Image 1 (tube, rainbow, N blue to C red):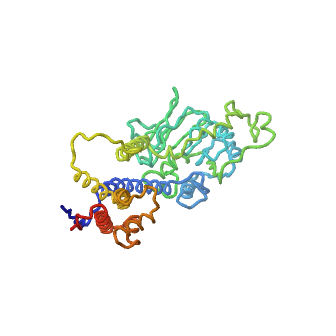
Image 2 (spheres, rainbow, N blue to C red; image 1 turned 180 degrees about the vertical axis):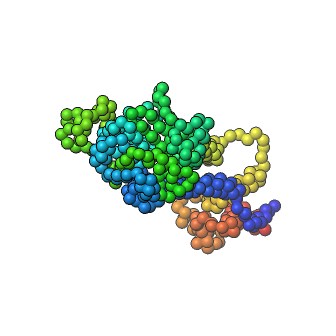
Image 3 (tube, helix red, strand yellow; image 1 turned 30 degrees about the horizontal axis):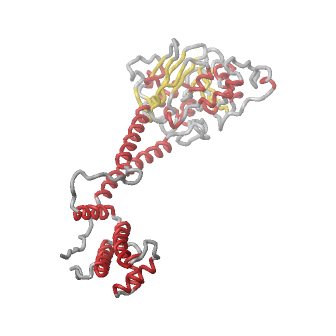
Length: 429
């Protein structure tokens, strides 16, 4: 009885490859979308450490020239200082509005001196970090931070806003970084905590967004009215425009417990505190996203890990197990062939066919298993009356690259085996 081997039909893309595409394509698109969102968001957000950020002399999008001009039109004297100690000396002449648009650039050892202003002054800080608030020794703490600034009304959280400046401005973009009082301290809260005021001899105003002061946002909503209201009035305005990180104060006063300008050092400004406070800076990447975003990202990572474990290949070699039922050898061969075909494993399939043919040919020719391939090819060619090179190609050639080559190899090995092992069976049809 002879067996007929039909050529395989054209193979469609395997289901394993389709499943892999269904998994990888959505994940790839999600990664691209997240990365693009992060990049565009990072480009859109201003950096407080950049030169010209909220500077009264800068006309760029992140500058503050429009705000400075609006204040001068209202009769406010705007004094720009690029050195912290010079700015503090200029503020000692009388009640002053002291504007610090980039508290991160102020040296930690001089942060406490920002509150040493004459009675009746106002200190305005833009988006100060936790260590800056701790250095000022004010009962305020930063809480949640939004992904982007939101324009809201002063009483958006249902609490009445007692600041007249915010009430006159109405809706403004001040809700990004939010602040809250610590302990039993009483603060005036507006814009859901994006703007707070600590009433005391030196009034401290903290706003968690730079949008109302920037050239590219000042004309939106009530930003102009809010910014000019916070910095305007009858007081002189000292605008601290630091071009970069403020250097550490120097001078003989430091050795005697005084700052470089002669003022005594506060108890909280011990050398140990000065060395440790910069290390307590918030992670900007962590603060750039709300808490729910990190929770969602962790859930997606966990889901991805579960998918990987679910679809992962089994570790280690296969373990033989007894079959619960009797399976016909033809079905087993057909099932294994379909697995090879499904995986596109033409090379392993060819090695299996060649190993089976050699296992039948060597005993027939009394050749030991360690016989060199060249000698095996010569002996088989002599007995089969075939060309040596063709036999060597069949038994030890390169792996096939197409299904048609694999089929031709199977036909050739089958014919060669039948010629030597079963010479009476004839050729397969």
